[in-house]
Image 1 (cartoon, rainbow, N blue to C red):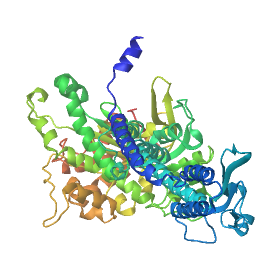
Image 2: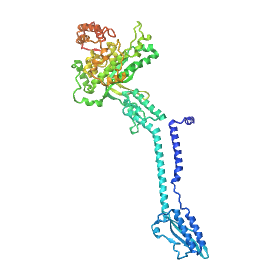
Image 3: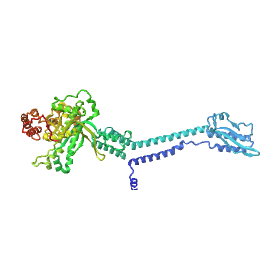
Image 4: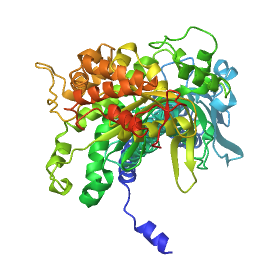
Length: 631
């Protein structure tokens, strides 16, 4: 009862009030119109007087007796009156077609009693009206009159009037039906159709950022509010589930075949190939402790840059883990990519030849489940390049964003020796397969990627601290990049990771962050803003960008050819077991990087530290690689 009272007390909806008001107004107009028009279209018989005239002639017939002249004049006047009454103009179809006066007298007066046989012979009984007076007996003779009238014209007029009235009524019904349908379409059906269109579009392609503004608006009514709510819900689903949850959204929002009323987010996973990037905010524990409530603002400021740049350069964010982010550049599912694994020419050969370590890795892979050779996939060099550019742009923007730069002056984040706090991040990149699907239960589900390759990206990010660099790139990822991008990266070590005995070369892109990056400005005399220019730059990517982009060249400004030559010699000696020579070259390379963020070269120091743990003496069982101590 309480629910019913609340329901009855609810205010009438705007769309209901508008529809009710329109219907009421139109019904009133139609009723008034019909009251005016229907009488005009209703046929009124002009022949109701023939009965009275016949009765009057009957009285004259009794009164005239055998006065034939008087009777004849009376009959002539009766005929004339009938002709006037019907407006006879057609002598072939007269109104009065037969007259019989009793008793019969005045035999010579044939015009008194007559019968138009020609007319009567082709007329139907329904078109005739016979009026017979009650006979009166006077002096043994019965006085009566039988008059027969032709109602053909009357029937035609009546039929025409009925047709006109029917046409008017049909016209009004069609008009009202059209008006009511139009109102219902505008106020109710069109908004519902728009909502269904939104649901269908999202179910068909959950990742597409649709412009729902192009759909017709439904005014300031509740249906418009519901439509906006559906648009927001679909946007939240897309943001919440991401690319890994596209199948979940699509299967649960499908409208074909009536859809299903049961929510089923736990769809089976499928194997897909992607470029995986893992990034992490350094010194996060200190930031959390010192910033307290403001930590959310700090994290979201970094997330805004990470998500924006990665999205601009072709990737999507799959997971936000507080201080870390899993980014994905999706290549395709296994079924769609399998055709590239059947014969054909490789996309291109990677720079240099396969080393013994890589040949070993290839043999190990051959013994496992057949995997897609990503080098056969066209266009992956562009995608890999853009993934690395996206992370490098994040590094630049973190050191250029005004909001993040303000934390350098935050007294809460100053170190014990008064050194300013500088936001830093680590990045790991890897390429491979993963199982894309839902993890969790009906109470909470996350759409994500699970595989050793995802873990490898996370291991690379964790290892950036050990090597003192901002980015680490696996061989799988490196081989997919264009030659122009590979030249700008440097190989820093060969390692084995936990759970695998396969040696793996790792690479980095040198970044000098302790410098001022100029503010971005739109070109002069351009109608485009800065964001439009950056988006166009990402869409029209060319490999020459590695030599022309100011941000990329400024980041690696310390990685001179002389430094690279020294480091490469030291690395070759280190891998070849000539550690005394390697020490000399790597110490030289470290000294050449004295202006870097950490006061030297991180990879050189990491290798020197490892060799020092063996007292600079290469072990007898040295195989040219070492285990990666970080996870």
